[in-house]
Amino acid sequence: MSKWDPWRGCHRVSEGCKYCYIHKGDAKRGVDTSIIQRSEKFDAPIAKKKNGEYRMASGQLVNLCFSSDFLIEEADEWRKEAWRIIAERRDLTFFFLTKRINRFMDCIPEDWGEGYDNVIIGVSVENQVRADERLGDFITFPIKHRYIICGPMIGPMDLTNYLKRVELVTANGESDKNARILDYNWVLALRDQCIEHNVNFQFRQCGSHFLKEDKLYNLPVNQLCAQARKAGIDFVALPQ
Image 1 (cartoon, rainbow, N blue to C red):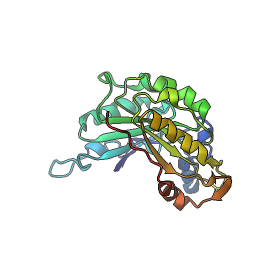
Image 2: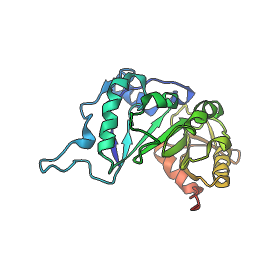
Image 3: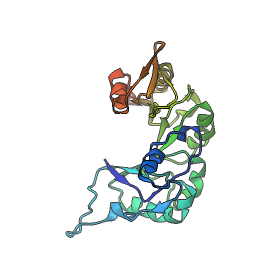
Image 4: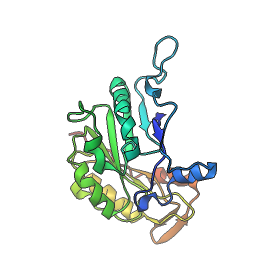
């Protein structure tokens, strides 16, 4: 997997952003996250070697805007150029995660049509209120590949009405010493919904404070992903 940050910086938009790792990391380095800046490596996916080959090898999944939100307002002047780069590199698959899916139709390129085959769009939701707020429109938009990222999961969620044409749902706990508790029952309920609707499900990260069978576990950050994998509850959708 490669990363491409055409710009960086972001603003908190909802309660799921409270302990954002980008803001925490920037604070440690003395960086003002609220300043949205175009990257010096904006053209990374189309940068070439001396022999004319792309530096970013074909066939990769590219994590897009890891340090920002691809749909953030301050990047409107740069996004058209970013779309052109994505269109040029049809041999790469680009994935971005957003909490600003309501801006989607105002941010797509003119040739978007029913969506680019090489773009996966994930919407992040943290509780039922945000799921209802963001996913109703999301499932109606012209998108070829869509994910729902339940994280940081700070409450139970019923996604039954939003799973049509969704390829993957993930569950992710919150990572911070003051993190809100992740209840394992919420994770299992999500998994059951995905099984019922034949949607891929992955439990990707426990919470720093993890409630299971009425016992509260306080887990170090470096064990959160491993503990989620150890649960062994991922579901692979059946071919249709």
